[in-house]
Length: 163
Length: 163
DNA sequence: TATTGTTATACTCTATAACTATA
DNA sequence: TATAGTTATAGAGTATAACAATA
Image (cartoon, rainbow over all chains, first blue to last red; front, side):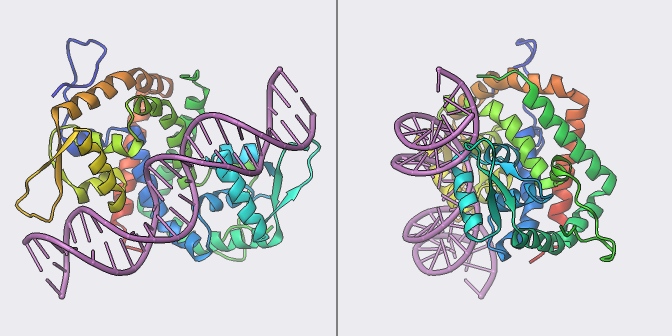
């Protein structure tokens, strides 16, 4: 089988055997790491009838600072049409509230008291799972990983657009 | 607002301001890092009329070792019903082929020659984007990140099931 | 009887384009 | 005219349960 392109096309890189090669893909490693950790948290969202994107929105608003739809789309990795539905669902449950904005185009929202309470409840309920992963992996490594992930994102976002 | 639970409930942790708090979530950091990097690769999949899950399946089979549906589900983070559709679509395009297995229950597949060729083409086409991210982030850090991600996954999967 | 996949079904998210309202 | 969101619509993935075939 043909190998991956290399700096010098005359010396193609061999593709190593299965697991080894497959784990070298960054995006796959990110996906699998997320799946294995997220799986442990999803049941808390389920118990509160929240989808994971909905939980991300609550988390993004958790410190009480109102945010507009565009910022929420970016931070929560949700496309605008999805966010529209999510904001409507959360508002119907009384978990968030639209707040006026000088720019009337912007859809600015903030957590209500019940919304804050629900998020705090989720944090408390999931704390054991979080700590379990933290301990098994090591707090130092976890901090290193978080820093690397955020740095990778910032650097990648700063790269010139491929379009 | 109430803060996150802590080891000693009497001293609740304060929730720091927005970006700071939000970036402390592992699963969100994983999602955002994946989004920012994946975005650069998706167009290559689009150009070949492949969805990202389909691309993962090709990648998992790239070294030529046939795999069964269960293994593919795990490695590619795809649920069985989705994989059934994906395998059917890839087989209809002649990119994969079912191979006989002593256990007739198992759906074992391997890449065809056109399948290998298409995957190799994708690797070549996306090589520049991969190298661009690698250089901007640093090869050493990238290797560290990959190792941490795979280790986190292995450790988390080994934890006792929360169910 | 347990395991491996497939089918059925409902829901959510993804993605693009067209549209509305505001700046 | 440009920007921020919403609506419309099609398609793909998510998730559960029920089912079929094989071990």
